[in-house]
Amino acid sequence: MGVWETITMAINALRANKLRSALTLVGIVIGVFAVIASVTAVDVIDLYFNESLKFYGSSTLSVQRYPPGRGGDEETYHPPITYGQVKRLERMASSELRVSKTERFEFTARVKFQGRKTDPNIWLEGTDENFLGNYGYSVRNGRPLSAEDVQNGRPVALIGGPIADELFPNQSPIGKRIEVGRVRLEVIGVLEEKGGFLGFDYDTRVYAPITALLNVYGNNGRNIGSVTVAAPTTLQLGEARDEVVSHMRVIRQVEPGSGNNFDISTNDSVQENFASFTSTLTLGGAAIGLISLLAAGIGIMNILLVSVTERTREIGVRKAVGAKKRHILQQFLLEAIVLCQLGGLVGIALGGLAGNIVAVQFDISPSFPWGWAVGAILGMTVVAVVFGLYPAFKAARLDPIESLRYE
Image (cartoon, rainbow, N blue to C red; front, side, top):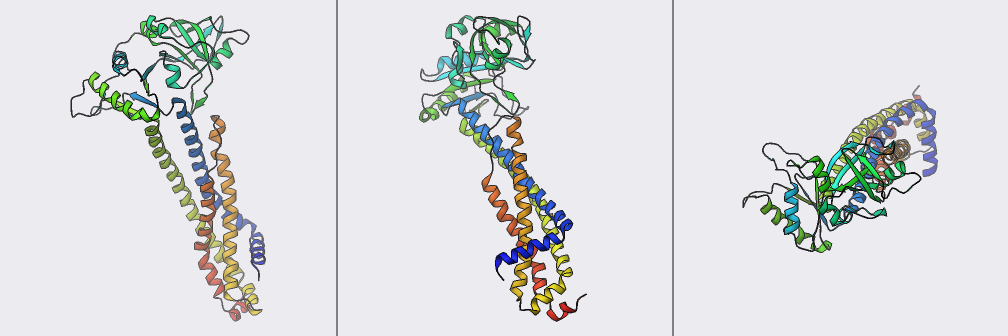
């Protein structure tokens, strides 16, 4: 008997017990779905995260109060990175390093202009003339912030593209005065759109000279939320990091031998931390899926054992006309493999679609974990063999005489 004929018999046997086969398929589909959906969602997020980091450039490092994603407690308390400290860093840094700072002053503000206003989801941030280069923005219309704007604390602003499109649908926003929070600012430029990530929209923001906003909102020991330092080239990033660490230890009066009370991170270090986080999520989703597959495997063994009992007479007839043990063994193993592969393919398809819902919701490029999909197919073959082997052996070892007598 050929392999294709055996596969056809296996499919016919499964079709003869549609409900039982369908219930077993559900367990397989759920298991594979859980693995592929979680891995796809994490892969989509990871892809976009790595693309987002490119905005900052490979030669840019970040100076922060705490490491990304971590806060402080009594034992690990870090004093705020003040505006005065950042200004000292700018003066002490070598001329080839470009220091920029950004601090948020409003995060639920409306932008108003002549009776029009935006939703209350606008961030008002203070920054400087190095903002565009260090933070990966570019100007669509108008001009960027200048050193004179920052030095003199001028009430001017750069606004995101969507803000300009909403408030100025039929006119240029350049030169118009808008109201944001406590300040009135003259629009000098419109920024190119950058998109968003996991609910953070980088385009619904207004940037003004940090000196102008400090004059209105006050300093009061405010922590500067984001400080970046750009090196001329990626090869000089290590030297830049050492220089910044040295200057910050002096500025923040860190005792010799004591650990830093600030954090320096680069794209690579952030990517490593995020990769560790996504790996944990992936393994968690895979573990849940494997538990479901274990239950599905037990279901496969059960359906095959029942099938062996119901088809005892058929097995006796096949043996009587010349079928050998390996033919019977092959038939029941193929039934298990066909059942697992059908469930696996459906689970992979549904899991890929569900995982990419994240891409649709947050306007992220779609992705598909081909490696995990191939692994799922191979894994389902292993599950089929492991859980189908005992019922297949049991069928192959049936005595043909006793089987023919079976009612």
